[in-house]
Amino acid sequence: MSKKRILTGDRPTGRLHLGHYVGSLRNRVRLQDEYECFFIIADLHTLTTRPERTGELKENIRQQVLDYLSVGIDPAKSTIYVQSMIPENEELAVIFSNLVTVPRLERMPTLKDVMRDSKIEIPSLGLLMYPVLQSADILMPRAHLVPVGKDQASHIEVTREIAREFNRVYSEILPVPEALIPDDIGTLPGTDGKGKMSKSVGNVINLSDDSATVRKQVMGMYTDPNRVHGDEPGDIDNNPVFMYLDAFCGGQDEGRLEDYRSRYLTGTVKDSEVKEFLVEVLEKFLEPIRKKRAEFEVQPELIDKILREGTAKARDEAQKTLDAVKSAMKINYF
Ligand code: ATP
Ligand code: MG
Image (tube, rainbow, N blue to C red):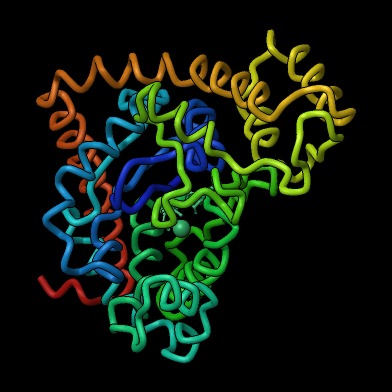
């Protein structure tokens, strides 16, 4: 039996951070052995909130591929490609836009969130269409599973409705995909402790940050706001420093982490000591990632080759799907 397919990806809006690693990248690295993975670099989706910033896309795409490769996404196993280089995606989106209503899209909870975060008062047609284009992204390689954050679950629901509606109206050719949503452990808070780590908020530690930047970010981190001195008992459950330690502390440091936990609870360790430990843990985690990134950074032509090959492979799939879609619709006149 052939492997089941996965589609997931990111908008190339900047560097990927530790939150992306915890919430999605580490899972992708695991999934790529068991599944046939398609990783989309969704540049068209950036137009919905920042149409004027297309000049950044090329460099952002390159950096995103470097982020992927540095954490172990392997182009020999998985297909990495650029959304806008697959025109069939847009054709599919136009077809699918007839299988979903405007009020359905207006009711998307993500629409309100994006409008608020990006200070958009009236949504463009493109922003309203976002879940439709995303449905095309997902149905294009006929993906079975879509690993996404909880925030994106409503979009996968629309994709399922579109696939079912297509199958009902024409014929049963589109698999109805399932969302693969990580549990809450998968959400990493920001360094400011105010919400999740998010690049537009700036409360991030990037996978590509150097040691000095990591140290600066960690030393400025929010801890337990009610604890003023190191000799007072503190909270470790809602404390971002300990949440990062839980996420990144490897096997051999588990014992040391346990010791810091109990000393924090009893008020026998300073915040700055725990932060020093976190710097050490993050450095251990990031060092091999930086090393791998540096190897690829000096081979820009290899990045282009990976993208060109991935995009060609994705386009083959897109053409197959579009042909099948048009045949089912009987709109393949020639
Ligand atoms: P922006 O500020 O532009 O929204 P972001 O840093 O929040 O960027 P997104 O592009 O919104 O990142 O995130 C894409 C996906 O990455 C999310 O759906 C989620 O799966 C994952 N992700 C992002 N931030 C985190 C985080 N802090 N913890 C866990 N997962 C995250
Ligand atoms: Mg976000």
